Image (cartoon, rainbow, N blue to C red; front, top):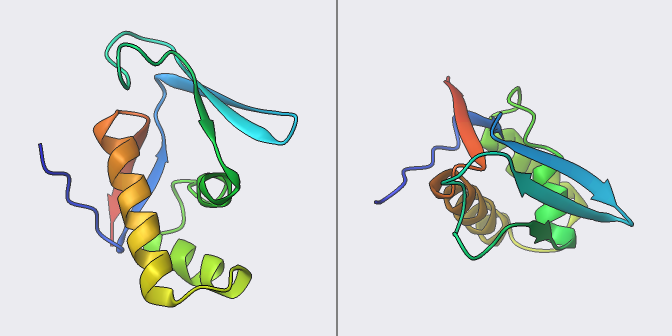
Length: 103
């Protein structure tokens, strides 16, 4: 299944997962079967994933998230855009994130 991610859409955490910050890491726990991979019960995000995750509030469209991260990290806007859309696509595919709206 090919997931289409648009910079003009907003994404938010699925109601089927719970996420908590523990000792500086984001831990994601699926609440229902069929979330993520069967062999993975918990997900943890690295520092970059955490920076993206914290901005996925269902209000900001991805374009705004990318712009925000571009001002925080020393990487090209193109690299950040590709990383963010790839990360979001993977989490949407795993049903951890859901698309909220189109502009």
